[in-house]
Image (cartoon, rainbow, N blue to C red):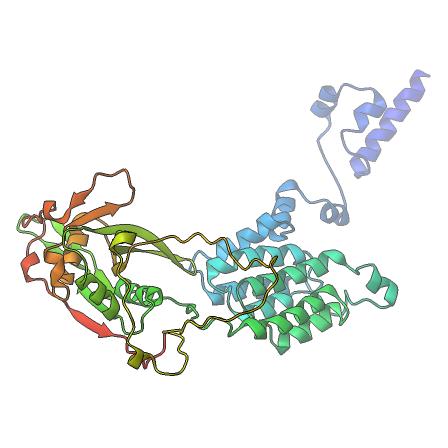
Length: 442
């Protein structure tokens, strides 16, 4: 028996030197001490080239995983790397082209499309129909098309169809109408009887009906200049096309002798001839109020405006003006309706009364928009209004800004500091514009 063990050990040593068994197997088979064996026998490891290629080390495997994104996080990193130079349409298309050329089978295309839809507003391509068609082109063609009525009935490839519907829903939310290329891509990808194709048909049915429904649409690109934006906003608020827009002050920066920099905000106001007439009839013993700011949303931009208004007239002081019959004319007029009593012969149970709460509000005399909503800036607006409305020099003006809990101050108490705002006496009305009734409201 001892001689048999020696022969077995020698045989295993010879096999190890030929490269068939590694050094970690020999001590386990022979019963030798691993430290003693490693001290006498060199660690020769022989393996074939195929074995090395099939099992790479951990570093190479990590690189392969990084270069093959399969999750939403890695796709986001692709767009972040492309956005290091600039977030533009060209860089966005470059990422999509790189993904298309990487794998002919387009593995992971659903995760990539979801990541691209989320990154589109950052690259400012959320309103570009060509980019949406490029994302739809990422889907493999003629793979998800149902072959029979059973596949069509059981929602063939539901995950891919849901992704296609999500692309169309984002187009719908931004008001982008699909074109013929979109239809061709959907037919090639999902077929004519699929959920994305039905979504396309619903969009094409409703979008033309609602496209020109708003008579006063807001442009997609708003003016960047604050004066132009204020002029556009006040024009939309005003109910009279004959209202006059006045620019009382342009934004500017002034440097004093001490080196301090003082910025002057813009002040843009609007007043109609009817408002000017109502202000001329205002009782000088009663104050007028400057209230605000009130928000106005233009798409995703929020601007604020201020009002010059008065308290409602008490019922005992209201005077009903009789209309001149010669101005009315014999025909019925929508502005001056004639009161005609008609016997409708209704049943006693018919009740034609309505519970309507009549909220009496004071008259609005003018509106303005400014870069700063402090009392000093709004006092300049009131001073500019006095040129066309001399009654403001006799009427006390009270400021009610931001909150009703603030202490009310009159315009006489607001003293303009000449050291902080030099050259105020030289300011004048810069520009007057009149929106004639012949024009169209933009």
